[in-house]
Image (cartoon, one colour):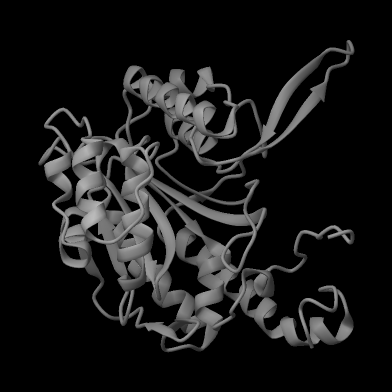
Length: 352
């Protein structure tokens, strides 16, 4: 039965989707049990926040609170529970996880949904290598729970029990694009737009006059690198340039890169992790730079959560990660679309 011709609640279509949704529930229960066994406490973050997040290319859903006196205050549905979870780290929680419904505007497709479930977890006093080990355990658990030996997506496979590939961004740019990425970044983290543009043009990719260094970086990553990641086994892509890691601390090994990694399987990005930045002044500077870029591209900016910056000042050293739970279920079940593993997908307008 066609997804396009019938709504998700049509009995025939639901019968096709139901085995995937029951597997979703089983994976969810398995993850909760794993976190409980590893001394994590589950927390619930309020969906309504004064700031939805301050990344330039994340778009939020805006609303407002009507106060008892009739006054109005702007609020946003969060794009991640990150700010709330870090406030709980500041409050003293040493290990926590959240299965949060999050909301992102401008996003809908096979791998994107405007409302989805984000699994985030944090470890106070531990580095982000511990999160890589967590990822290996959770991917294997999801596959085992689904009765699958491999994660699959549209003809691509990855064995979650195999040792993960670990690849730096510099290595990936060299291997798949023949570009010396770090040569376009100064020791202070400043980026050389023209130097990267010259290299990108030699690879046959489009370069527009108004492209920033970040635009070119993303074009190479998406076009030439991501299709190779997570093939046969999951890939940890790590050591992102500092300018591409607004919430991560710089690497002690090389100040040009940050303690950020992304997890890929079957060419699909599953998770984004940080060794967390805890310097409120530096975090404010990065947020303001991100919002300036957002204003340039989209003509809007989001407020900065001042309480979050206050909490950073007392937050312990920590590592944290956000994993797209629905995408994990997709790969464990072999579903081709994210809508197939969401119990009640967001409605589309009948007029479209």
